[in-house]
Length: 174
Image (cartoon, rainbow, N blue to C red; front, side):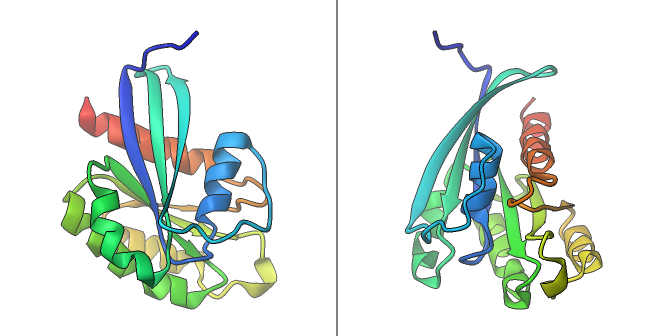
């Protein structure tokens, strides 16, 4: 038996290749971690149905976009109709952090001021962290978004991040 959704929302996962977008979404949807996902080519679509007390039944369509530069020309197309996005970097890879403004600006160019949430992923790799949490917090403030440090491997803060962006989208829609 399927339950009708009160809301259907589209959330995009954005960030460079290998920051853990696919690992995060599978941790959120299936509560599983696998360390050996192949790079997403183009886009991977997933769905999570949930009941949120204040909104009823919600169906989140999650678009996991490939982070390779070769897919940049398709970004605007994939972002069409997006209600919000998780902007993700790998805190052990400074270059993934330095390219975030491109991702944020591409999203804003395509979707205006739809909600964004910044994720610093791979916080479990304490000995190899190259981007401090304070830097993530500062960037999030600059673009008026919330920052959440996560680990897809341990599951730390993953559900909080997804529910956070979903609720932010719903607040705007309602």
